[in-house]
Length: 187
Image (cartoon, rainbow, N blue to C red; front, side):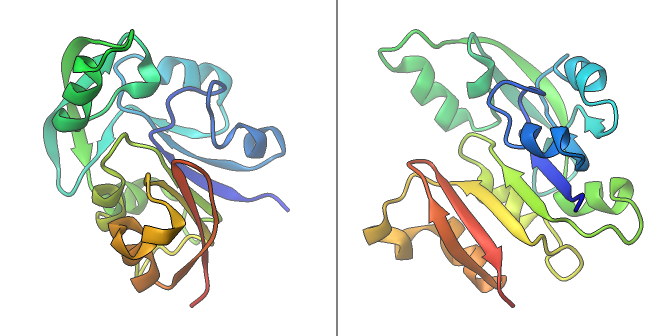
């Protein structure tokens, strides 16, 4: 079976990739990564995918994107970025860039092949996962599996906005790591 993924906050075609395994096994998809210049590597190493150098937000906009000396930490959240930048660690903001953003639903309307089902949606956007989720049209686009970040423990799941939102959309939590929640469509 060859599936289809949408990787929001794809970061890199290999490093920390949530979709590399699928790509290597014949799946295809859409990689969305706002880091300026990062899409060149996707176009080189993920030629069979659609690779977009944009961000996802609740509306078409141009937002400040915070770039770190560790690109895996790059993101649009000023609060999250400043928190990392001011912590006692080796990671610091090295530049800010204005990046075009669009709602996920608009991107899927434009780039998802006609009639294509989404098997796997992965979101890793450094603190703004809920914004990305809310920008989707859940009536039109219901991936079979969704992976999103939220640093919540099992005892406090009811406090997770990501968990509650996806539950409302017909998803059930099926697995969890320290930072990541895995959901399966059940209705």
